[in-house]
Amino acid sequence: MELSDSKIELVLHAEAKLFDGSGMDIPISDLYESFEVSGKGSVVAEDKLIVTELRVTKSPNIILMSPRSGDEAGLPVEIRGVARVFENNLNVRVKDSNGKVLAEAFTMANSPDMGKYGVFAIDLNYSEPTASTGYVEAFNYSAKDGSIENLVSSPIKFENVEAQILKVYFSNSKKDPRADYCARTYPVERRVPKSEAPGRTALEELIRGVLTDEGRAGYFSSIPQVPRVEINKLVIENGLATIDFNSALSAYGGGSCKVAAIRSQIENTIKQFSSVKKVDILIDGSKDDVLQP
Image 1 (cartoon, helix red, strand yellow):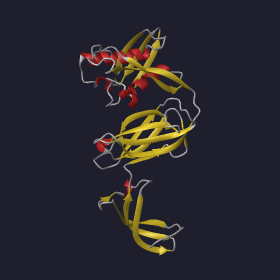
Image 2 (image 1 turned 60 degrees about the horizontal axis):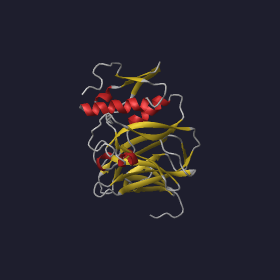
Image 3 (image 1 turned 180 degrees about the vertical axis):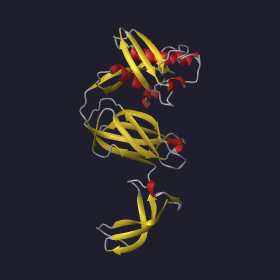
Image 4 (image 1 turned 135 degrees about the vertical axis):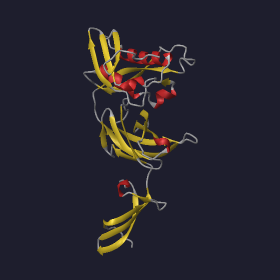
């Protein structure tokens, strides 16, 4: 049955089944907006089809759900979607309509099994755009040759935001290739929303880890990425910054060099503010055995 320049309503039968392109039975809940499907069933009216079988004929490996085409992007931009990619690894990036990449970062989908979709979510700050419009993109790098695969793109408009530039400190394998100076860390600049609590904002950027271009320049972080490190509390008083992290900070794997690097990253990032002279690092309210080799 072919329809031209008309719409037909598909009504799912109570026992309707959904199949993927290879004929495997999959849950109806696995249908996403960008899928293309074909249906089998009974026509009960001129514009209504009771569907007993649906078959997915096209299903992208990465689906961007937010931002949608034409949305305004603030700072940070909230990027959400689902993906089924190799080892759940993918990248997201923001670029302006002049082609300038403003930020790119690695993230993961929480897929329950190989070949299944998993949700990904990341909030990404980005540098000053050179145009009023741009794109949010999601993709993965090929494990075979490093080429970009499964690229999806959503056109956006950049909001006018009040921003500030903060420094975040990381180790660098190119500046210190033999790791002779474990406690020596180097700054990168991040454009973030203007805040009344810039110290916390800077530390949150530190916890996010390195961006893709920073990693290519040799920067790396010794702060654990999994499980997620979070700031329980930050108090700056009389020149002392007391930073209380959750227990994830202790999942760094040990070693005196790594401990020195983590402490340097945290201390240098918070000491960029003139109000901070000393730093106390706590984990869940305790100083005992914090950042010990």
